Length: 454
Ligand SMILES: Nc1ncnc2c1ncn2[C@@H]1O[C@H](COP(=O)(O)OP(=O)(O)OP(=O)(O)O)[C@@H](O)[C@H]1O
Ligand SMILES: [Mg+2]
Image (cartoon, rainbow, N blue to C red; front, side):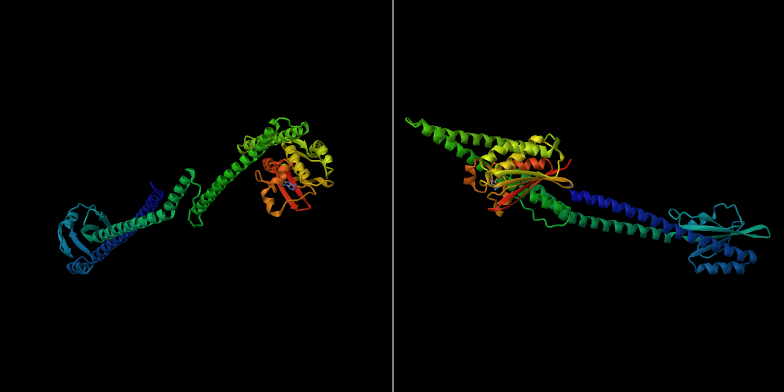
């Protein structure tokens, strides 16, 4: 069942219940109070006549009473104790006779002897006349019940009218709901179906400021994301195949040269070295890709333990020192204290090695690389500052992308494939940390890793 119809039905049921309750309260209240008012009036009119007749019980007074009632909506009948009608203000019909024939236990107070308006034609009251302790007659008062029946019919008519109006409101509500809720939902359902079928470019033109608008906006941005992912994946695959093909072209080329006869020993060594270098690059590239693939599938587990970070930095610096010395680059470490962090030691070493490797690769000889460990309130900051070639501003946001290198050809010479920083960022984020970069071309680059303090 459509949601608009469901909602419409719920609204209808609630409306009907409220209407019914209101009607019932109103109906009961109005009818009851009117009946009470009229019957009390009837009894007291009867009692008045009785009082007058008790004072003076003669024909003149009896006629006077009948005359008074002939102008009113009520009717009076005075019946003697011998059941003889002494006076009546109007004709006595069969329904009145029925009441007059009822046997009465006389009491001095007047009382109602019939108040069933649904079944009977009259409300009726009786007031006994007692003179000198002797019961001489009964004053019967009659009031037609038609007016209550009319009132009842009128109320029921009103109820039916209101119910019809509710039904019309319901139809309008359902069509309004269908327009505002069901239709956008159907559009969104179709859009998500398209997305799941692999058609990634959907755009929903639902301009609303409510939850449905938000949902449509989310679907649109999901479509954009999927689109971008698909494009990125294509680009990534194209880049990978290029990255794999280049070293393989070198390797095949040089092995072909080596197969030639009478090749000199010196040349042989040169080519073999190139082949060896390219094979190493290829192995590193494949290892890095494998690492990133593991991270994507979240199969990459971080094993945190308590680590003294300055100790870890020193250890990494010792490993990398020889390479820096051979390029005559000074490595200076300073720290404002030691901090125990909850981190994966191996992974953070990998981060530092990658960053220091970049700092070394992209620095000229006789420069300095500073490593500063700075403690903040919630984080510690590891700053790696080089005096190298720097990164152009436009490239800064892109260096974290897989296979991205500022100068493809030149950094290839340096043996990089552009995966290092992608891995670094992934590891830092897995530690709930943050990595930032600032750089000036020709002046140097500063990369800061922020890690949570344990
Ligand atoms: N300290 C730096 N100075 C100047 N440029 C840098 C520096 N660090 C990174 N870059 C630029 O960012 C690019 C991406 O760095 P990344 O570490 O991801 O790749 P790579 O070093 O080229 O290769 P890999 O790290 O996979 O061996 C580099 O190619 C380089 O152009
Ligand atoms: Mg690198």
